[in-house]
Length: 307
Image (cartoon, rainbow, N blue to C red; front, side):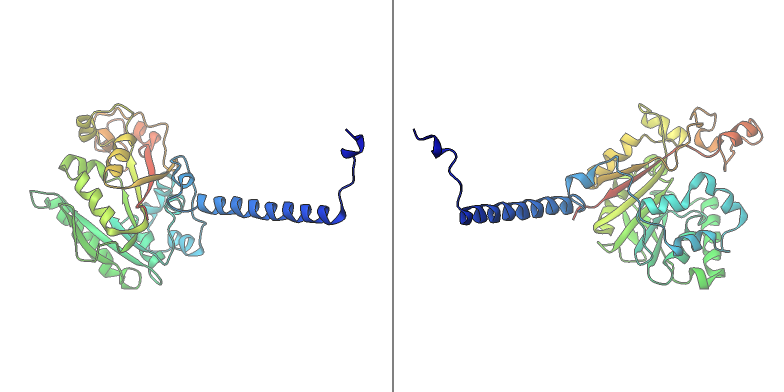
């Protein structure tokens, strides 16, 4: 065989054609890679469903202003060190143009932040929770009356808030059929477990959310292996329980955060979580000890209603 066969130069035209093919392949490969990266950020993409994700929305001047606003008293502000409202709401990816449904607002600790934040461009719905069976207790009725007075006293802040109810897994008082961007619940799930309403409520939240909408959950966190009866007695709920029941309602877990963790909370108190501040259910007994512990260790979870 002629040795020159292996050393024969490649004609210039063939070289140019080869380079052109290689350039086209490079462009195609880059396009495929960019497409894959873009898809990984989509709500239903596998990477976006990583439960260890802690992505948060950027802070906004509106959120900073709402948290610093004069509508919040000193007692509410004193709890920021435990409740971390700015980081928590950023983790739930709030935006001032969204429609937000807060469940069981209690005295309105978060309402004081959400109402001014959403006042100009968004909508805030508040769902008072009615347990199944007995009518609200006198304490609950007094709390709701105080909440109503709070809203009525400051129409410039709360005049756009829409108040309704949640009972037996059904909302009333506002539209709740794939119409809201966020459903938020803060330290309420243990009550719904006690009432036997956890699954009905989670299904109602799923129905209320738009496809792609988020459910934000903050709840007292029990040690793994805590029984259901212990949860009812102490107010602490395991993460596994919340995740299991949210997934059964159709949600997908897309994020966990330790924003509201408290490693000092040993979760073994005479009055359960209510031994700790702000409840101090035990009165003066061990009050200094409980004050040093601070508020409860809490899970902070983010779920999505798939598109």
